[in-house]
Length: 377
Image 1 (cartoon, rainbow, N blue to C red):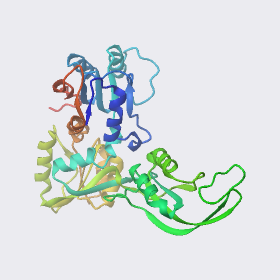
Image 2: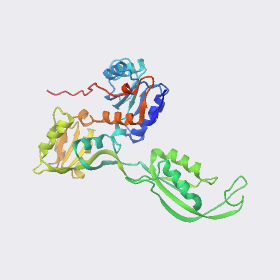
Image 3: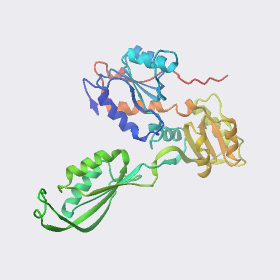
Image 4: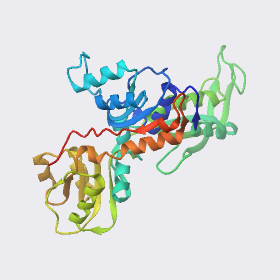
């Protein structure tokens, strides 16, 4: 818990990183701190879907100088800030009023407890798993240590974030072998003397980790290893990350009539309408979801044997891609992500107890501005 009479944006950012590590974001995305001075004191936080000009106005009115948004208001390159469009107007007003903007977007999309897990839970989809696991995200560290020192070193690597695989922590593989070395004139060996041939029993330690943790894991390795020169290798693994990625696939507690279930979805997500492909001549049970634009994952949902795929921003020809094997349902972009604001607020309220000079009652708030640009008759 954080209690601070002078809480700064620099202190807030690690909490947001804990919630949605920027390393989880897709390469094309623009997440993290977009506008603001990291050393500014935080008076209050508003969490919104889109950091549009009315949200900045709301932040000013409610004395909040940090806006945490889902979609990044700055996405592609910007060369001028003259107020000629909605992006420039929002950014200009934020700067003028010393309001910081922090975006989470695909960092929360890919998170195991993020957008799509939230959506599954809201719709009663159980036993869900990642639909498109993240690639090129796992590395392995191999190092060698004297047997009597290995346990201490291994624990330090675990504390730094290594050895987490799925639902398990402190995972490693260890084997015993013989290490040899001979120091030169400038060496300071832990065992033996300079120029002495040393043959010692060592333990080989192998641990995997998410690649963005490499720096802190290597720092732990060098800090806790007893050798003057540490032998180690870092490998990039081709394994997919089973807990990180886009979309989820799960099942309903029992088979359901598709029309009946989609009417429930419409109510829960407050959809103005749901566009869908033809219903199947069977009840549905396996349901895939991908919050936001998800036409690119139709093939993944089919490969996962989904009966229904819930997403948004589908085009006319996308509906043919279901091939009569699966129902496609477009529930609306905003609607598919609507629960993320509350999730972020709940997380921050658990981590932060108060702001000064503004008390907690006005410290962390959900934006009341509806930024959904799509309207329905």
